[in-house]
Length: 355
Image (tube, rainbow, N blue to C red; front, side):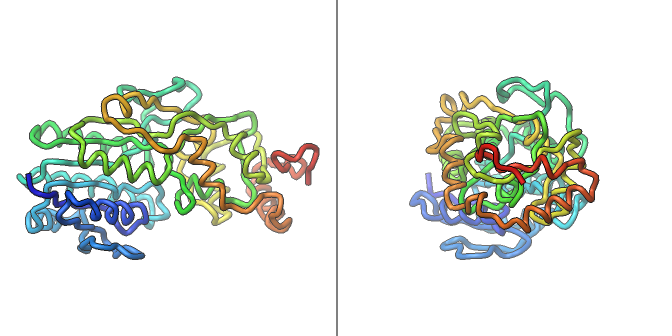
């Protein structure tokens, strides 16, 4: 078998660009073509960039012209803010995936399809099992947002697998990705100068280090395994444990409402949150990774605990944050009717110290 020709979508974002560079350095890969609607920032090494919108028929021409045999789909986005609004986000995620799969179906040379999905498809609620396996679904079907997009994307991928049984299809349901350089809603949440929390809730969190995401995608390209796999670091971390490590001031919010919480965080202009991500930070989520190890044959280098440690290692200590930043967020919360009181603001991990 000749060397692979790999097409990677979503290379304008850091993780897509880094993966494209990683796979291009593999000696068993002949060429890597990165596609996106805007050029990537930073060095892309030996990756050939083609400015193309996967929502248009031009992607089929790219597959045919470049003799692509492997497609890695990484362009499903999580927040409306990064797409210019919810309508555009849905269009990019769902219509883009449909057009890409239609192009792959016509491209006889395409024999490997890897799709980066998310554990967000399982949802997050008080009725969830301790651990979701790949056969399970959400307790409540998502009606809007990123979770709905991801579920629709996976549905189209399953349809493609049925129509093209000669193509090996791998779907990776990745836990929330973190790392020192990762820019994501969850990472932005932990980087906030003051962190709002849901009063009475201490969710179980599970993370995937960015390096392990790249490793899992690379493994998916070259392994013989196919199907759907949960990808996450071993173990869980309670939100309270994570916040104690950061030493961040927190605002416990009574009468918690996910939509209101998201609106408040967006007002700070520090993070852009979807209801699905806020549900995760209220109820948490755990996924079973037995199939990842036993069938997919992949073991992350980082556990959930060590991934968070690496993520937080270069962050400034919360106890040194300026009082003005704390007061500014308090005013934002109070002005929006959050019911958060100044007396509830405390520095996690500093016994008896309040503002």
